[in-house]
Length: 579
Ligand code: ADP
Ligand code: TPW
Image 1 (cartoon, helix red, strand yellow):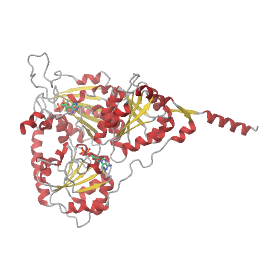
Image 2 (spheres, protein in one colour):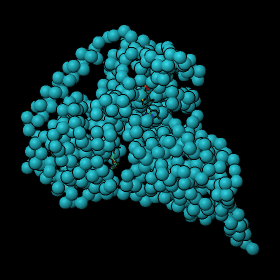
Image 3 (tube, protein in one colour):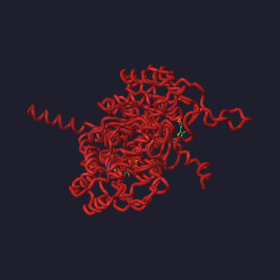
């Protein structure tokens, strides 16, 4: 045998001997699709999967609770249009992650929850395996889609399917079940490589029907008091320039929903935020762009909406249309394609809204802003939400690139209306559910994804749901500054205990004068304890400049705020009293 032939034979033998396994194929399949980060929490059977991810050059961000890892993945998905990946162990780990998956689906964020699971034959006969659970079926009602991969050669196609399900159409959460034995299955390396699938055009553009665009434009043309409502679907779409052009070209006043703040700077002259109740009540034609008429918009009816109106709704999900009230002009497609089609149809015959309408809005805005300025400029002692938020607003104005995470009741409502946003996709909050507990997960996800600082503005109760992740923030040295509005309780801290015979404190009360700043010091972060707006300004400025993990315990008046924030009317007692 010649030397070359001998070498070739040896190579062939080596190739046929080279094997891969489920662990490697999962990582290869994710990397093959441009996914470079996993958020998760290790244990049997996925510790080695996480190790391998790291060894193969991916980032693995390890959390203290799976819900927070899932929230980080979800917000990464919202920021990038690529599914965020959360990796957990079976049963309890999976269930901890499931809340985040359900929250992602509810908010239309693309994410994939990947959980290890027990052997099918044991689970299906309920023979009591370690962390046994029928996870696939448990996930189904809470996810946009749920899949299980049973054979190593299906890993490529299974991950492709999960990616496409997460990001195409209306984005959402996908569950992917990986039985432990799948990860250990070996496969010929060449066959394994061939089985990988790169998803082509995972979220194809969805062009709206021309007659739907014409119908919408006709309605808009005839409007006397038009209004545009921007939702987080509009922010997600990354069609920022066209959305701005549509608003400026038509001259129509607009309202951003909470996470759409900054899509255009909040200081934009056409923003009607400071006259919100007025425009919602008075508008005659309202164009919704990536926003649902759910509870956050009073379901499109009732006192909030005042005068009868007609709706135009741009959405990728056809079944969203007519979900709460009749929609006169649905435009189905992705926001980018729909907005550019509308823009193309706006010609010189398209008049700007009357001075009567824009003038009336400007008048309300002036009045409300003057009133708000007077409230913000007060300096009560102890400080309250307004004086503390004035300080935060002024610092954040100097750093429009900073990500803002926000949760709580009063802490959420006041921050939303007082702290202006200047850039798209920089505000992440309690969202569609008004859920508490997204704080540290979103903060970590946003810091890792953007590489930019995060300021998390947190009610003391809200913070408690994810507070242990301060250790994660310190471990990864993330530039996250957490500000706690500490008023000693859920909502307020001064409720009386209504059971004088019992040993316990009021149902809303926490330990008084708690020092959350000491928590971060335990992990090597920088703690600040502040009691005045001036101290808050100094601490926040310093902490942002340092770019290191920090926590500011901002002690505010325990009587400040209201129960349930601005949702007082949703409390059954108040709702019953109104009837
Ligand atoms: P908000 O809470 O800000 O009002 P919602 O979460 O209620 O926003 O609504 C977002 C809407 O945007 C959903 O109905 C969703 O189907 C839609 N959506 C998400 N992404 C896109 C997209 N790329 N194009 C069009 N619609 C989208
Ligand atoms: C998962 C109910 C809504 S707001 C809130 C709770 C517990 C906390 C309010 O107090 P906080 O804010 O954070 O101190 P502030 O500024 O008013 O003092 N569990 C979940 N989600 C929700 N929404 C709740 C409970 C709730």
